[in-house]
Length: 403
Length: 87
Image (cartoon, rainbow over all chains, first blue to last red; front, side):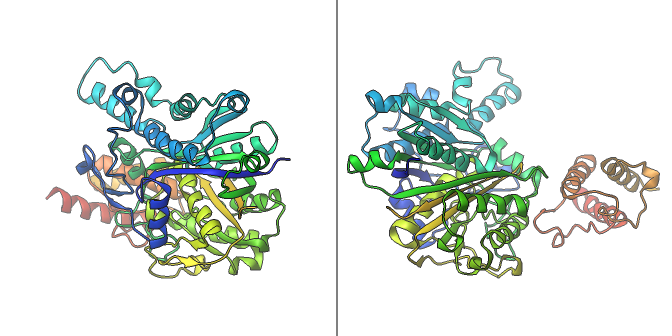
């Protein structure tokens, strides 16, 4: 089995338009949630989110590209450029044939759908732009990364709601580990902050009107975010041979299904995914120092997740730190695990644990060290990143400090 | 029987897959076999039927001003919302 390392990272999200800005914001416990700005926002009951307000496409993409790039594709390409640039890889010859792209998204080109449905239904237009289909399809971002960087191996998009990115990165990891690929561009992207996107979530009545407060007893729901994070996963021997800078090693991955309820989480399903990742990584639970929680800030997720961690880690659960950075950047749905992997890399590489902000009052059902409100300096060697999706689909990654 | 009461019993009965005559006013939704998803759907149906907005967050069902402890409590709460929002 090959060892797998991360040699590049890129992101755009509400906390920053690159990795250094995002990590600095996480270390400061910055709140990236703000008032939403888009058409018809006055008809929404939920009016806050982790929106990227300063997104400027000028100079980034030309007119022809803009006609084909939904916002989720734009975010992906910006993050991919940073990640591939950092890795220093150039995909030519055999490397291009043995490298691919696996990205997560849940809504894909939802803004494109929203705009065009509005045009034909509300405005009564009978004609839409010729590129609506290639712009809205869920695999558009993956395909554009493949085209832009000449990645000719396995390329596909994974959609498992809030676990999409973790499932995607798990596939990328296993493809390299098995020897099927040399390098994989992976992560995820989401852009659901448009009228139809937020209106749909409103209906479920699980959104907060004021703030995302994971693990706090007065939490009252999730807050959506948008953006992307993209990584270069690479065969360790290949990275070492070319002297690449290694950000972290990916050592394990597991996925499970609750097979029980379409929205309510299950402790058993989550705990099996956590234990599975530990087993897959061939480590002892006692080596884990930090867990980046799914931590949505809903009543159901946070208590179920804490119970699952306690189940899977036993008494060691009281020694680890667990935080939810969704409190800062919001829930990026299909892109969330990717942005959250940045907090894992910061923990391993810089020894800084990102906090759970907006934490106000302890919840006896979430009695773990949730790193409340302020980042912490700590040396950790192994971390986990949890993602538990609607539909009961769970995906957990394990990472280790640079070998 | 008031119109509001009748319509709410219909909504709840449909959600519980019961005949409206089998819904007792002192029963809770839980006793009627309505789970959290059924509750959210019932509230949606109430909002659509009476053209009102019901203040309800699934994360804090007990802290909402909207009393859902029994069928009669729901009827009372909806009547209050109608009086409030339609005046």
